[in-house]
Image (cartoon, rainbow, N blue to C red):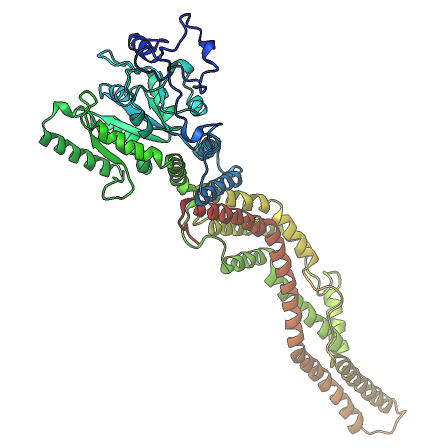
Length: 596
């Protein structure tokens, strides 16, 4: 693996020209008080033996450069992304959030650094001539060029003004690989604020070189892609770099180098084909004053077209907006990567109908309808006991003795009934969790189902306990106002039977004057009136009994629904609320709606 030495042959020649102010003994500590205090070891030189002139510092004079400032919309998007990551850490794995977290970290780090400088990387394939273009822009052979491949083994930085040391530190470029350009005052003023980085070949056979490229490309403010007529359509370039960075078109330059080898008409044909490929990659082109990538053709060897690049690059740097646009594009890319885990279909959440169906299933599982019917029958039995004939009540007492108490409900269901009820509860929980998670992205759907499953643990036992406690309304069954009158009428009918019977018995015994009509009539009235009163009471008792049963069913339904809501629906609703919160944040980041 090739490595860049502290000073190569080309560097030594450059140092001889640009470092004429160094002391003979080469003591680098002697220049710590020099005007160039940003750690750059190469200095601007003047012709002849005259001492170097004081550099023009521009906006950075008198102190460190002002930090980068993000505008309101970008700050809002970054805040939303930070909130989104914080809310999602308990639901999404770190790998899913890794890129968004990196964007936040890099945006924060870049904001603290100079806003007066623009860091631009020159990237290209082996033999594309990017290092030659780097040297041409700098006006001095800083980066080594030659036929040996790969030539550039590590990133090299060149700064056109002071105050860029911390920016270059962020890129991990050591002091020995930092340079200053050798240019006229006019040329330097044109690119003041530019920090140009020459990267290793992105298709280098050395893995370390490609790692340098991938690392630095994530940190710079803009990129100049240098392509040559032979490899401008290289699939590795388009698939690995250009296509994934399509959203960064506004901070991207695509330069066709080595046009000195081509006729003019061939150059135009290649440019047209290059634009077509970029369009297929999804890269917007900055033509007709529209934002997008700048496409140029030049020859770094002859200098043809370099002035155009210098002019465009100068305007780009003077705008001081590349860093913010790069951060905004990074946020866009992070939002696009996160869209599958935040963007859902329409109708997310539990409808009122789904909640009611869940409550109905729980009520069915706990036997609310059967409990209401049993309560109704129990009320009717009580009415029949109170209003029935004594002889019928006596017969019923004899028939029911030794059996379960009249009107009571079984406290514990049978084993098979318990199993069936448990299955119904589990089915109800699965159904409502599937309905709640139907339109959610996979991680949030899984979180909703897990919340429902956790809440369902012990739900069947709680419902069984409720069935025992709320099977019948508390207290004695209410008695309608006509009930005492019916009891009195039934007692009167019984009394008539007894009086008539005793009267007849007295006549038979000769104790009373014989007169069969009156006692027989009294007995008939009692015998016919007793069942008639009982039948009338039974008809009159249907309404109160039905209301009593409905009240018992309602209480059990409400108890089951309350238990299901507390254990299942509320945790599910909490997960849905968390999803809505992160979806709102995602909408702020993406700038679009992501469903209701």
